[in-house]
Amino acid sequence: MPRGTRAIAIVGALAAMLALSGCVPEFLSPKQPISTPTGEEVAADLEPFYTQVLEWERCGDGMGCATAKAPLDWSDPSAGETELALVRHVATGDKLGSLLVNPGGPGGSGYDFVMDSLDYAVGQPLQDRFDVVGFDPRGVGRSSGVVCYDAPEMDEYLYGITPGVRGSDEWIAEIETTEKAFGEACAENTGELLGNVDTESAARDMDLLRAILGDEQLNYLGFSYGTFLGATYAELYPDKVGKLVLDGAIDPSASETEVSQAQAVGFENALKAYLEYCLSGSECPFDGTVDDALDEISRLLASVDASPLRGTDGRLVGADTLVTAIIYPLYSADSWPYLGDMFESVMFGDADMALAFADGYNGRSEDGTYLDNSAEAFTAVNCLDYTYQSDVAVMREKAAATAEVAPVIGPYFGFGDLGCVNWPYQSDVERAEIQAEGAAPILVIGTTGDPATPYEWAVALAEQLESGTLVTYEGEGHTAYNKSNPCVNDAVEAYFIDGTVPSSDPKC
Image (tube, rainbow, N blue to C red; front, side, top):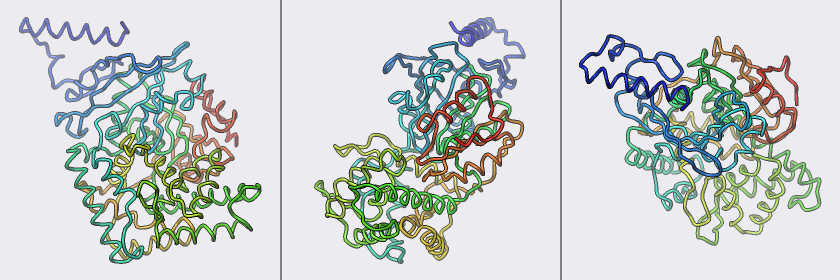
């Protein structure tokens, strides 16, 4: 029996004997702090959560699965609970501790990430020395999840065509109606959890997981949105930071508008990089220069925006779905060859390949079911993590500014406020810098050609964090550890295993 588990068993038996004898000493008073498996003290109302014992069951290939209980509302732990799904691959060598992993999103499943692609998630050196733990954050996947629509309704929500000219009063009114109905369905089908899936609550969940896994400090590997989750944890619990790697970093101080514009520019730059690659080969569907190809893509998007293409299953491909189909393979340069095939198919009026790419992004399977609730969780978390405004005139100004800095992709990135201004739970949170004063060194990784989390965000986060250290990967694609080069991998693994922090940016 592990030491932490044995301690809980002994304390539990002692408490039972004292209760039967009618003797309850002062140290067991519910008003007093309670000791957790790691020996730290927590408030009495958190005791049922921080002293729980995980029951691991064999699952998958050499994995163990368990479910943890967390407060539904961290500001009122007695108001109910929510479930967190965990999967663990036990260290194969001399164990240093647990390593929690988050793949991003928000809405990405850490459970699936570790269960289905452990070798992609972390390299063998980390598998040897750490119990690798994937978890689904609150609202996501196998944890107590956000539930909104059934599959046909999600099809209509994600792939439906909005009537009217983009940005017109008619178009905006239709979007508002669609988004309000979606939010109402989420509230009805999810319940009170919908108002508690913010990132701060998820970060508090991570501290709970740290403690019940028996770790005095948190070791964590977060990708993309997972970097914001990790940085938020460091701000809340700087003294509990062990080793944190934040790969594909988000700037926590960036507003929703700044995020949208930066991502539009990032994907447009990635599209340019793809076109340079494509035009240098012999099987590119475009001719001329990169600018010529960008103009052709702009015309293609405008064409399907006005006259959507119909797939063999009856679904339509308008500009929004085509943009999703373009973005999906831009996350990795390894997928670029397939992007040319997709463009060529759409040019010939075939919608099926574009739909397949959009389905991959949205987590939709060939039989029309959805593999997870990532699209629903994405909206639910973001509506609580940012502040939105309802002034249509301001929305139009922001949309025009985004289209100006990214003329091809940008016109389809505007009006993001519409998704959350009528959300059932409104947020007044103001994004701000995260310093995490007093935290141990934190590694921040940025990729110079990252389309989804632009490199300047990693630079900003590393500068904000009091103990941040930047590792630059000079290349294309979203995130870098275990998918770029040995320089990045060696820096991450030396940090986790030996505590070695680069004295300067290695510029991998």
